[in-house]
Length: 114
Image (cartoon, rainbow, N blue to C red; front, top):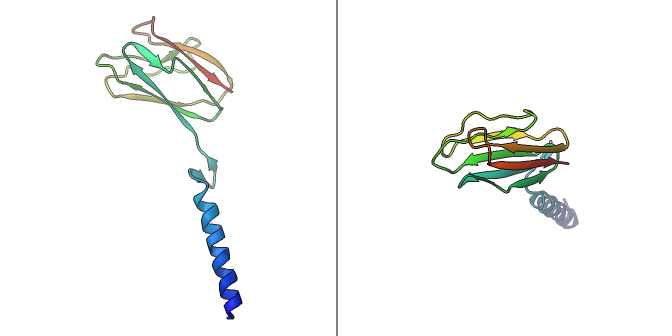
């Protein structure tokens, strides 16, 4: 193999490596996205979360008392979440989903799926 071919092969190898490194989180199935909502001090943070359809959302209870995550229309409903427990769902259908804690109904949030 000539020196020229070795050089061209090396350049090609480096170019492929650079392209692969510049696409973090990408798999054969495409990029994945995730979002989090913290439950703390009797509130959901952020209080309104806007995501694209297909996003995985995780609510984590940071309070030392139990909470739930229940959409007003019952599209989603968590079990009772103790401290540090999580509820995860994948937002599949576009729309606006107000939600609340069924144990503490004054705790409210909103999920907007685009």
